[in-house]
Image 1 (cartoon, rainbow, N blue to C red):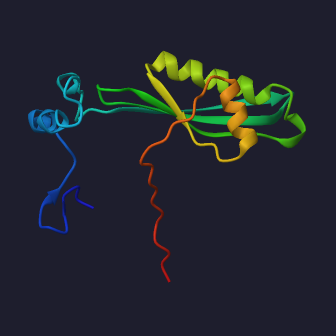
Image 2: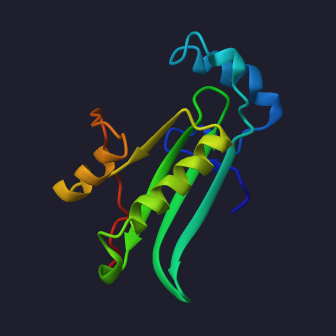
Image 3: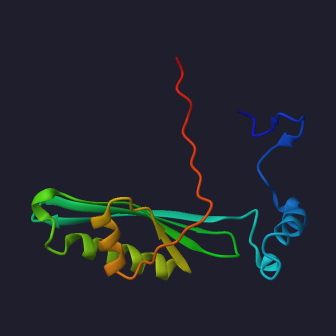
Amino acid sequence: MTGHEEGRDGAVVRPATVADRNGITWLLRHLHAEGADGTTLPRVRQEAQTFVATNGEQVAGLVVATFVDYGIEAYGTVEELLVEPASRGQGVGRSLLDRSLSWLAAAGAEVVFVSALDEDVVGFYASAGFKPCSGPWLYWTRPVRR
């Protein structure tokens, strides 16, 4: 892959460069009228961190958090939070969540998202201060090749 690809309509799709900054800002003003001048694009700060909780030498749980900032609205996501069955109900999950939220706040996250489908999991996050949100969420999966 060369970094430049021709799109379906013949447009060239390539990684953004500093030379694209004015065009990027102009486009973003349509979405973020007040904050587009502060954008850091094309530079994007992205980080991820995995934290584990241990019980002796045994890993009892883990949390994976990601942080994204392109100069308008820095946000975080709790990607995964898992606690092994024998350690559930003992505060391990809350300790992991608290550590990931502290890390995300220190990084500059203004909001943190998490996906929770099970009612018990929704209750867990609600007890930590998360609130339900809705919106035009869509998802994509890679097509199965046969």
